[in-house]
Length: 313
Image 1 (cartoon, one colour):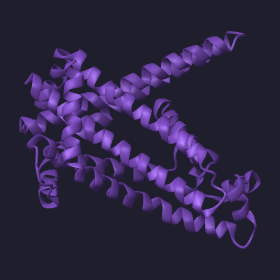
Image 2 (image 1 turned 90 degrees about the horizontal axis):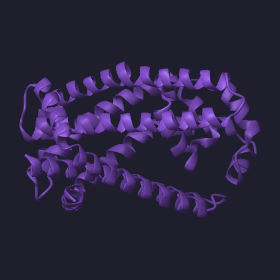
Image 3 (image 1 turned 30 degrees about the vertical axis):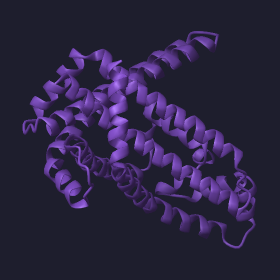
Image 4 (image 1 turned 60 degrees about the vertical axis):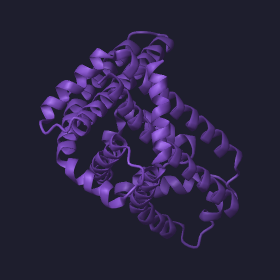
């Protein structure tokens, strides 16, 4: 009940400062252009004056893609049939749970690290805004608060990466070894499938728990104005251990809402034929609304976690 009450408070706070969501959306869109523009020129050059462009409008041209894939380098190798619609979401989920994102081209990984730095900077501004319950949003105030907390948040991000690569990646590899050994010594495909599903679910839970833990560590820094990051780590983890029910319940309420948003998006996206300019444009708009909703949900989670922390404070 406490989780639900604070989730509703978080929703109200996010709605009142929706300008923060708009800002994050615009910056996210601008960052996406960094990849979209070079990819557009690469595809345009590959299509040339051929009929490939028309064929791609009607359906994915596998023959062209095989040739493009062999000739492409760097981030262009990420252009695959599953990059559109539900395939992109499933690919991202698989890449996170199975850690296959580590095989991406170096250029993509570098951009990923830059994006993490951007998110770290913005997280400081978002949490400060929700903590202070700012009635009138100000870009100067937002970026000023983000700059003040950035170094401490940067240290927290480094610690989260240490935990991710030092703990979760080895655990995932251990899970994969176990699953592969079981698959080699059994004639049934059901057992390794169920085992793989169990391990994937467990990995997703561990990833979510790590995210939640470091959210409360950041909240410690902002709300308690802690300058010692290690103290914030200790107190953030202690808070979760003292209130595991409400912290997990709040987190998974927002996860379920996120899942609902994703399902609605996939349904709407599948109903729009992309064989014309109008269809492609409508599909693009649906995708942007989906991204905006996901960003709103993330800000809502931050706001709800702050409200929950203050409730138990």
